[in-house]
Image (cartoon, rainbow, N blue to C red; front, side, top):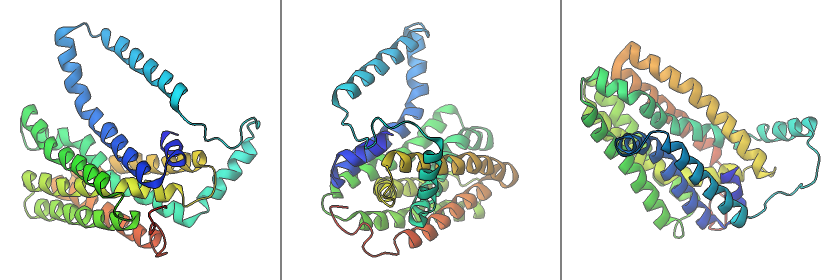
Length: 286
């Protein structure tokens, strides 16, 4: 609901900057979490982490209570499962919304597959140390952050459409580099890292704008649209990460990166459909 509330509360350029910042935090957290946790238990009892979590949750709760704007348009209405089902049906019948939501899932899947499978790929497959595994994460997530920072600078100068197209080039080039390198030599993990870094830069540049255009592709309540978008993405992530695991087990790094490239091609195909209307995302007001 956070994404939907932000999209309804702020103008386009501010929304995209905030969404990019949220993406940075959400993606860096799983990487920093184990490191911070390991450092914590060297200094303080592990039980203290739950006190910290509770304190941070309380700060978030009171901050939201004081500052979060109200965006609901149907306050006081009783919950009706029939009406809820009707709303979701209307959202999912919107072809442009479905294309955007599926595109977001497919383009993010290679990064999530990397997060899930990289310990096995790097430590088990390539026989590298945990330290080297950590170092190989730096360029990929550093590139993602760089893409988001560039997005924040360009948002007020470029249309959302042009930012998505601009991000599409490194997305496809990066996935192609990673796939080609590992098909030629299965153990070309440095080339794979380079390719995934280029790809990550691209999604840092393109994804926040695509989230906004997808949410506003439907006229329904943004809470409903956001929930439907989340369900479609979770379906892709759940099935896709499992497929990526079997791809690596059966064909090594080459098959893993070919699977990622297929996701990139699916994203590109869906973008052709999503951006078919030349006016889509072609104004600074959204």
